[in-house]
Length: 170
Image (cartoon, rainbow, N blue to C red; front, side, top):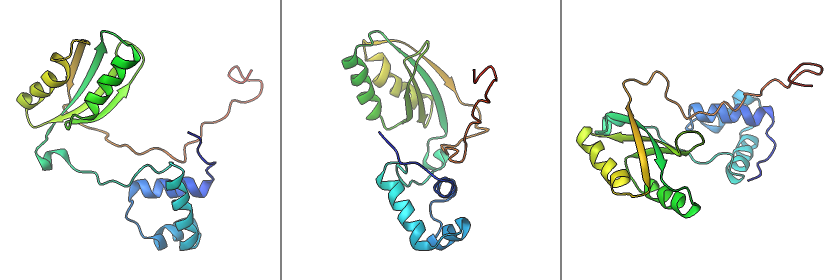
């Protein structure tokens, strides 16, 4: 997917919206020194181009009865495209799976899942892993604390380009 070039104002708007998507257009406009209609046009363009994927509410999992978080690494027996796609679909349909990443390295997938209890988590592992002959192995870590929990993307982050004549730039 090709995304539009983002200027500094677009990036500032993205950071502001990630912090609080319910801010008024007037407040956003004041923060970036534009008119509210100009900000509205920019936000519309960012949504239509796929830069802004969705507006969402973040919920405290324990408040809805899901106090436990698990990180699960999964190795597939066979990595044929049809097998990978089948597993992706199964994970996407599991309500307790919060995030799933297809990764390189020792594992094929990393999954973040929620559960009410260990019994609840065990039932999910049976549905996703034990009942699937294509699962070679899975490993679980129980999250004890969340010192940093964010899906925010640093929109204003731009890596320093390598300097001419430096080892990285040569």
